[in-house]
Image (cartoon, rainbow, N blue to C red; front, side, top):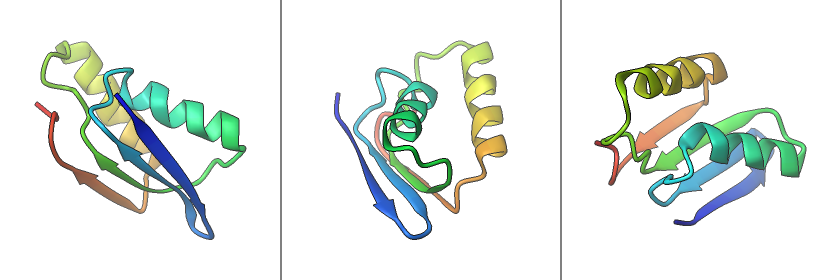
Length: 78
């Protein structure tokens, strides 16, 4: 699995491979390591197919609270 974060004037743009480490874990890692709170966009896979209902709901709640400017989900999303 691989992921990339780019600092922009509007916040981080996070590109996920399949997010096997978890979307929340990956985004929080980038926020912490890069010292940027705002997330402008998250694109890529979320690996939520095998997730429990609880994990799925927690991820949706996280995204709602995070309120990224753009959200583009693609492969490996369940």
